[in-house]
Image (cartoon, rainbow, N blue to C red; front, side, top):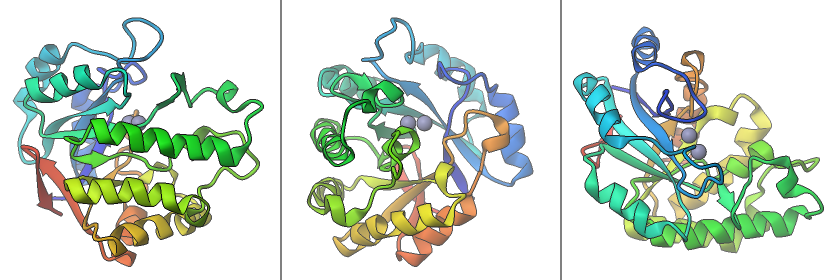
Length: 255
Ligand SMILES: [Zn+2]
Ligand SMILES: [Zn+2]
């Protein structure tokens, strides 16, 4: 079974997708999905980007099986690393992804974050935050969207060029390889050839340093985006000689 391992449903503050619609959309595409609803404990507005995990399991557990698994996307922050660790320990997730959504307490989705900041130092700070956070969230199964900042940064050219941040990216990659954490190929941005071209050196370097596993996720928040650009993600994995996996019971399964 091929799994889209990064799908948001209505337990995420920014999605209204019903699990039943997600499962139906996935079935049409002959895909399995893992729901990975958002927990960002440092989100500044109270009650947002957090959800009742018991209720999530109560509602979704009946669907768990060959085509559906239960996951979570934890927004990694140093301040909440103990709380995040408890969430990881207290629930029986199939799959936990770790993400950087905030840098220095600011949501990097916000355009204001980039105002007056020069690209190189902003991106260096982003990778430094990733290093600091992954080190306190070493239990995650996969590191999500390493190129997340490229979605929202307001620079004329917001792409990451591996060579410009090589030593920082290497530090991230070395840590995840040592801990057996997979690297996600987030397919959301893979509709453009130049984006794929710029991402490939990062995945090649991961392989070169001893990395083996990649997960693939569309980061869909709507049913129409499930499985989006998944073929492109597979071709990156193939080109970089990486094994595509999904996680069940916190263990990698080959796709
Ligand atoms: Zn994310
Ligand atoms: Zn996500």
